[in-house]
Amino acid sequence: MDVFRLTGPSQLRGVVDIRGAKNSVLKLMAASLLAVGRTTISNVPAILDVRIMVELLVRLGCSVDYDAEAGVVSIDVPELVGIQADYELVRAMRASISVLGPLTARMRSAHVALPGGDAIGSRGLDMHQAGLEALGATVHLDHGYFVAEAPEGLQGTEISLQFPSVGATENLVMAATLAHGVTTISNAAKEPEIVDICSMLVEMGARIDGIGTPDITVTGVSELRPVDHRTVGDRIVAGTYAFGAALSGGDVTVRGVGLDLMPNIAIKLRDAGATVDPLDGIELGDGTLGAGFRVRGADRPKAIRVATMPFPGFPTDLQPFVIALNSVAEGTGLLSENLFEARWRFVQEIARLGAKVRIDGNHALISGVEGLSGAEVEASDIRAGAGLVMAGLRAVGITEVSGIDHIERGYENFVTNLRSLGADIERVEKRDILTFE
Ligand code: UD1
Image 1: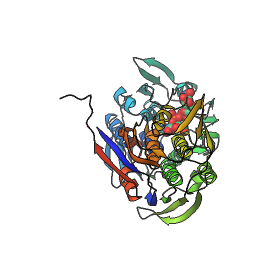
Image 2: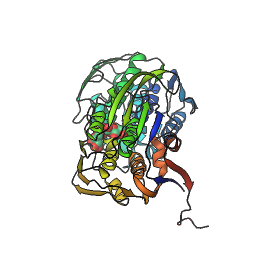
Image 3: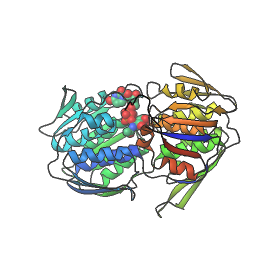
Image 4: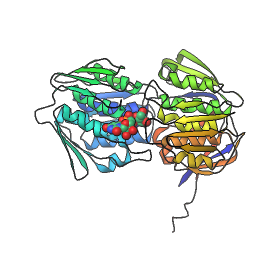
């Protein structure tokens, strides 16, 4: 069992390059199933979830070349693809359910294992199901599998989502691209990752209007063509390093994600006393030109009040970093979680570092302390794990974070990046006392 061992306190200073968004690239890979031939996706981060999606596509019959270092996935999709996403893979990565829409649309049948809950509250699939049924598919549960059938193909329709679900919007847009006629989706999600997926679908020949608005209209076409597409930068990873700079009193230049993708994040960082400056037209790590920004943290951050909301609101995925920042801030901060059933396992862990957090329903009230003290803590999900590492920057002594496989699902080169930013962190092997020889 490996852990991240961090010796604090330390500040983050320097430059970090961010590649494509996990939450976009996995869906772009699923969308490739909609067209026969070779689709190539670039700016792909080297993370475990990409490997899981590669495995899923291979099991569906695609031939996939993945160059993790170059950040390129090339997917050759045959005329006939398989229709089953196995439990083993869906359980390992919930985003596997994004093959549901493409398979139902193109193969007219999909058997996708129901994901178990992961550690972040219950996450239903009812909007995915209702949307596919509105598009004319029959959907039922069979031995733990979600089975969608549309023998005559899907039929355009009007769909109104009760909530702007990211996953449901993506699955339904992908399904509608090959439906007969026009589909309108109201109350659609507007996240930059949705815009990225819709942009790739348009390059593939799909007809989509209202991209990035709550009202998306898709006019079905009979087939799509494979394309080359560059993944949008990961605003959550960018936000992670930005919060790391703000809470540690550091100075970090983030390259690969512009502030236009993170409007509310920049506002909250400034509320915390950080200086945040956009950087446009800068050279990125791979030599291309793009956007970035620089964050300079105050010596001690000021407490902030944040409510998580669908885009352009403050993203739920950054909530652990808000709690971490407030834990060491001047004053009392508040975090209200509005998207998921609250992810408070993180709070129990950061309390081990000395954070003072009181929970009331979906609200966390955080009283800032001068400094935290290093301790052993456990990551319960990707962002909680990264949040504990960032909190450890402000903790005196050694913080050891276990459960790092969660972190590596979403962050490439995490230790290397943090070391190059000046953190004293290493990955070390630790014997699990429950493993007897
Ligand atoms: C995606 C992101 C995740 C992010 C979330 C919200 C990926 C792989 N994951 O998750 O990191 O935190 O968006 O920005 O892209 N819901 C239902 N029924 C449904 C669908 C959703 O009740 O059919 C509920 C969920 O339980 C949750 C809320 O809607 O409470 C938001 O879920 P959704 O936007 O769908 O998130 P994901 O796509 O799962």
